[in-house]
Length: 275
Length: 122
Length: 231
Image (tube, rainbow over the protein chains, first blue to last red):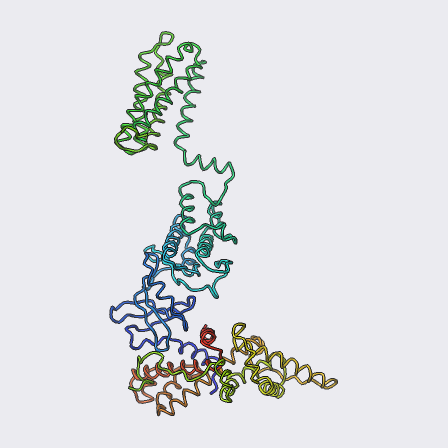
């Protein structure tokens, strides 16, 4: 049977559509293609709400179990898992209404806001690592910022196969330190044009090709960001002397002014005495 | 370290330093030791009172205000009790005393822990 | 209940009847197994040769025939190492080597004569590389064969109506009729239209899988190729 290009593409599309008959879901539309699976929006007939339904590519079933074990405010909760008639595994999860991180950043949020998002992502990573889960494909496309400011990290545990190369660590084996690399890359991607050198240094340290030179875990990276926000010295950056003095000055401004006032008073009295 | 203790130490040390600046006034240089002792005691009292306030109220602004007030008050008392060349050195003692009081006020707010002073609280 | 038409029937109800390439080779490469490989790869190889070596229709046909006759011996399959590449890539590279040798030999023989060039107009010439064309034709042929399987299956089961509905919608070139139109045209309810389409598509997926199974080394390669088809 001869088939034209358009029919071929159509068939490729429809044959892969998940057959949801027998489930409580009604397929709506495709909303994205993640690593190793396609995400659709669907309607849960029983609960009358919309959900995100991810169909895993052929013969990849581990992801759902992995994520279902993780319970964290920044990890999308999984509702249900199942198997399609054609053998593919699927799971449904909360349908997140919000913006992908790269789109969110395009809206020029403040630096404090951007760091807040990074902190949420880092906390999710730290939590997942303690549960033995590794993200492996962290990038702006996998981070969503919801309408209420909540942050979600999606697409866990898959291998960054055809992913964005700049976020993938040059490691032979992907593990927690590779996630740290990706977190650094994520930080770098959200930093504005005029970035404080300390923050850039944090990102660079996280992204060093030498695994041992990176932060040992996500919490260490976040701790450095905390130090930056408090005006303390950052582990990643050995700052020049004048910068350290400036920082010291701004942190201890009040005290320095008081001492200056004392000195001024003393000088004033001295000069008054002369006349 | 308890805030009262902080105030005590800061008050004594800063008071001693403040008193030592009398060295620059030749007319009182001979009484330097006495001045330093007096200034240290003044500083101690101001420090304890300011520290006591910091123990009760956590507010950098008010701590500075209260410290300055105590510093000014006791500096006035000291100046009233002293006489140099026949006049009371109100300006020379109260102005620095005011600022030193402010410094003690700031330090007692920013350092030390609130709570009762106990033995070995150091 | 007929497992083939039961909606929401048990998963993996589509029986895998085909052997993988490794299994077939081990079992002695029946002519049926070879036929399936040729059925899938003849057209893609032909198109590839035409584009890559800029030969005319007749020469390309000859080369394609020659390749399958000469190269498709048992040790061609035995030498295939699934760890290195997919069977599709392995075969394409073998075609390249074969055709390059033959083409060079033919050119040498034609020294002094005119080398015929037939414009490759009817194919997607300028925009596609020969490798891309090879993969595209491979996909096309894969679905084409699966569609034949589906039609034969429907004929066997007396489900011509279902196939007609499917053909009218999913195989329509250009504008597709609405479900309502289809329902009227075929004298069934719209719900039936939805069911028939879902059923036919599910079977199509199954037949595509089977066609792929007989031309891949095993489950891993099969799933990799499946993912590739649908990327």
